[in-house]
Image 1 (cartoon, rainbow, N blue to C red):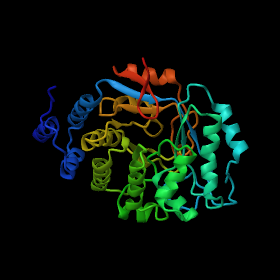
Image 2: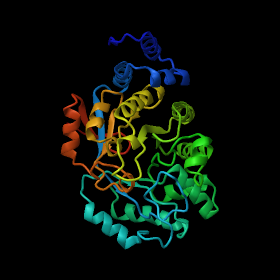
Image 3: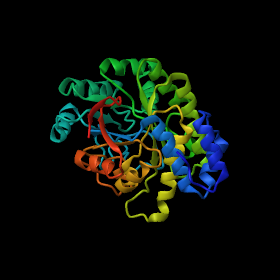
Length: 364
């Protein structure tokens, strides 16, 4: 398809993409700097259609946060509590099952589990969470524990990260979420998440998982102190690991949420930045099949726009999301399948309900 732009560099990059040439960090910086946002969108839309046609994927899933007690002190987090602090909780088995049973329906395909780095409980607690869900809800996949949590479990248990993941798989783990990545540069991590896994440790956790046969997810939390170059370094680092393992299913750019919902526009990422970052993610990550627009962070209408900026996945129904809503997310904490299908169809795309591994459940 013809790209309509006055920007000669965008036309040059279009030719690179059509010939299967990888974009460099310098190319990515140009795409962040050009005033022609719609030119960038056209590039990303073309790249996405080459991979996914008009398909847009979603899943019926349920978020579970078994504990909010956390040893880490990430500056962007409003979810964590210290032991004994007001609002701190750790679900036992009965509370976990009660939480799920109140929200369960037979269309749910996936449990998405992320929580605090709670060193008040043993590693067995985290294994038992998976075992309990697998026993009572065997039809749902368990997507659990970020790369940062894997590193924490290694310290907690005295096991290597490989042994940790092997034990989780024995308990019933199906895949790992992409969280804990934030921005994969040490400058960023020292300032924003000094108590969590390093860049190399996060990448190593996913590399180990891939080599053990798990397919996993990758995220990027943008919109705070990182430079545009650091965002692109982050993309390049997950791209390099993907070259080695082909273990990532999807990349998810996550817009940083302000500390409270009452904070104004100046404390939020702009719509332009959100759309541009999704588009650049699609263009840089040539070896990823899927790019996700996370409606919890950017809202449903921008998520719909993202479907022409390179995104082909709009996540899922969620039922009840807590982590982004513990800070300044303005969206609802869940959405219906009917609404997701409407969102996709009115963008002139084809809704595909999927399972965790992008197998098609139903076409609409």
